[in-house]
Image (tube, rainbow, N blue to C red; front, top):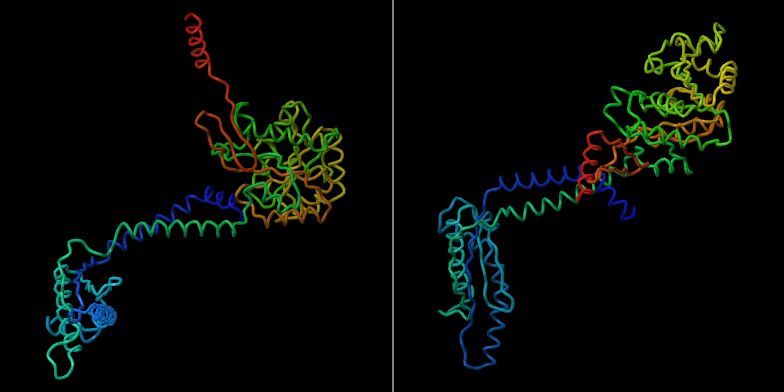
Amino acid sequence: MELKDYLRIARDRWLLIAFVCLLVVLASGMYTLSVTPQYQSTARLFVKTPQSSESGELAQGGQFSQQRVKSYATLIKGEEVASRVVEKLGIDETPQQLMARIETSVELDTVVLSVSVTDPSPERAQQLTQTVAEAFVGYVRELETPDGQREAPVKASIVDRATVSDSPVSPQPVRNLGLGLVLGLVLGFGLAVVREMLDNRITSQEDISKVSGREVPVLGNIHFSREAIKHPLVRDLPSYDPRVEAFRVLRTNLQFIDAGASHKCYVVTSSVPSEGKSTTAANLAQILAKSGQRVLLVEADLRRPKLAEYLQLEGSVGITTILLGRVEPHEAIQQVGDSLDVLPSGRIPPNPAELLESPEMIKLLHRLRQEYDIVLVDAPPLLPVTDAAPLAAATDGAIMVIKHGSTTTEQYAAALERLTSVDARLCGTVVTMSPQPKKRRSGGGYGYGYGYGYGYEPESAKRVASKRRLLGRGARK
C-alpha cells in the first residue's frame, strides 16, 4: 500500500479511528481516576572518607567514595535496612513490601546518594524516607568499621532531610491522557487498515476493474436518496432533480454502446437481490423514452416481478401468457407513455428457468427487438438463479447493477463467471446507492469514486426579480 492509500483509509474510516481513540482515552481517564494517588519523599546522603592534606590521597579517597556509593545504592534497598525500618516504626508491613517502594539514584561523578519512598500518604512517605536514610547511616557505620576500631574509614551523612510532598507523583493525568490519545490513534488506524484489507465490498471503480480484469465502463452512478425509498421512480420528479440527471448521464453513456446499431436489446440484472435493478431498468426506460426513442421494458423476472407494481400496471397478462400461446405480444404489451411500452411478466409459472431458456422466448425477444429502438429486459439476479445468463447471451449483453458498499467482490466475480459460461457480454455497470457528493460552501457539489453528481435547479421567480432590482439600482448609479 502506498501513502495515498493510507491517507484514503484515514479519510474514509475517520469515524472508526475517532471512536477507538475516544474509547482508549476514556479508559485511560477511568484508570487515572481509579488509581490511588502516590506521594514520594526524597532524602540525600553524602559519602565521604577521612580527610588528608595530600592531593594524591584526596583523589584516591574521592574515587574510593564513588565506588562505595554504587554499592550503597544497592544495599539501601536491601532487606536488612527495610527490616530495621519496620522494626523501628512498628508498621504493619513486611520488609519485602517496603523494599518494593524504595528507589535510589546516584548523581553522576559524585558521592551523593538519593533515596526515595512512595506511599499513599505524604506524611507517611516522609517518615519512611527519613527513617530509611537514618537506618542506612547506622548500617554503613557498622559495615565499614574495622574490628577493634571505633572509627570507620567511610562515613554516610544525611545532607538533605526528607520533606513532605504537596503533589502526587502518580497518577499523572496529562501524561496518561496523552499516552491514551497516541495509543488510541495507533490502534484506531491499525484497526481501520485491517478492516480495509478484510473489506471485500465494492466501493470504487478500481474494485470493479480488479475483479473484471479489464476496464469495465461504469455507465451510471445513482446516489442514495431517502426519497427514493418511498418514491423509486423518477417520472414525477422535476427535470433538474439530481436523480433525474443521473439517469440522463446513464442514458447518454448507454448510447455509446453499439453506437452503429439501430435496434438494441439489453438485459438489466445484478449479482444478488435488493441491488436496485428493477427500479434502475424502469427509470432508465422512462428517460430513454423521453429522448424520443421507442422503448420496450420487458419484465422477465418471473420469480419476484416488481415492475407492474412500480408502474401500477395489470401484471396478470404478459410473457407467460404469450409463451403459452394464449395472446399475441401486442395484446399483452401496455403503453405507459408516448414512446414507452411495458410487457409485464404475467402469472408466475412453476418453471421460470425453462420458459426463459425456451426457443419461444428467444424468438419473442428477436421479434420485439425489431419493433423497438431499445428493449430493456429486467431479469432476475445472476447468483440465486440461472435465468438471467441465457437471456444475456440471447441479447446484446448485460448491464450489471452494483449496490455501493453492499455487493462484494466475490459476488461480482461469481456473477461474471455466470455470464462468461454462456458467452454473454457485459456491456457495463450501474452503481446504485452510492454516497451523496459533498457540497462546497459556494453551493456546488462534487463526488469521489464513480463520478460526479450535482443538481442544477433553476432560480425561483423571487430570486430572479431580486437580482433584476439590484441590477437596476446599479445602472441608475
